[in-house]
Length: 264
Ligand code: BTN
Image 1 (cartoon, rainbow, N blue to C red):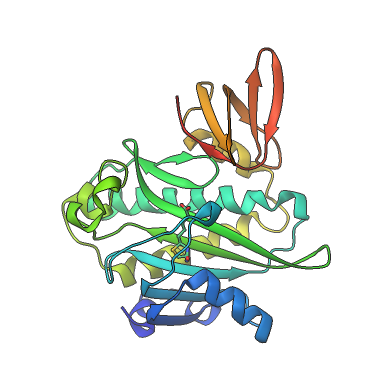
Image 2: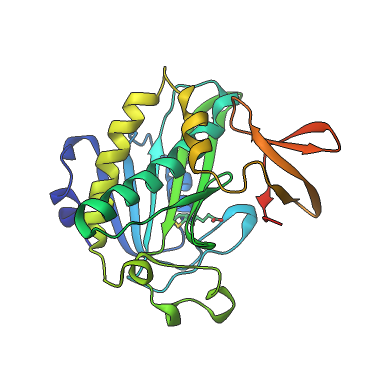
């Protein structure tokens, strides 16, 4: 996969700058380092065939064999109040899920239904298809940039996942029975994301929570949520306008700003 291939699938190529690496430590780490060195343009996209130190949420590792997954980070400079930053998380997960469902129906007639596991995992039939790592950079209290890192399982077959992940992870190839052109997938998604983003940000982001709630998993169900070393339980009763999870326990409601929803 190279920049020219990705560009050939973009209807708005002038918006994006693309950098594609065969090997990198982590596309998120690269962008975060480069942001400290030079002024980077919004909509810069860094993709890699392989990451030697891919990162997930909570300092977990994110590993994929070379050339199978879509591993990329996108630099955004949203003009929103910091307290609504989590909506970029929810919006991005929603948008990727909606895009994958759309192309699976249009091109493949294979009816993919993607669920969202709060805040930003994409799940299909109880297995993880994609993870998102959003990292924000500040100057004092002012938001400077957001790095949206996406790891989407595309062409992995079962043996490409480590044994302990095989029951918990899934790829588009496994779901559809065919391999996917990753440049086409990335180009198509960037176009779609750019259009949707322009619609919702910076002025019209209130509808995001309601859209997201339609695809979120475990809503109105008992959940366990891991927050650092602690696990809390309750009913996942909805989301706040900032996109935080509302957990109802013994008639009391509590807002969860970050954590792992485990189901029950
Ligand atoms: C998670 O589910 O914990 C988030 C995983 C995010 C992985 C992607 S791969 C591209 C980008 N670079 C990284 O190091 N991480 C993100």
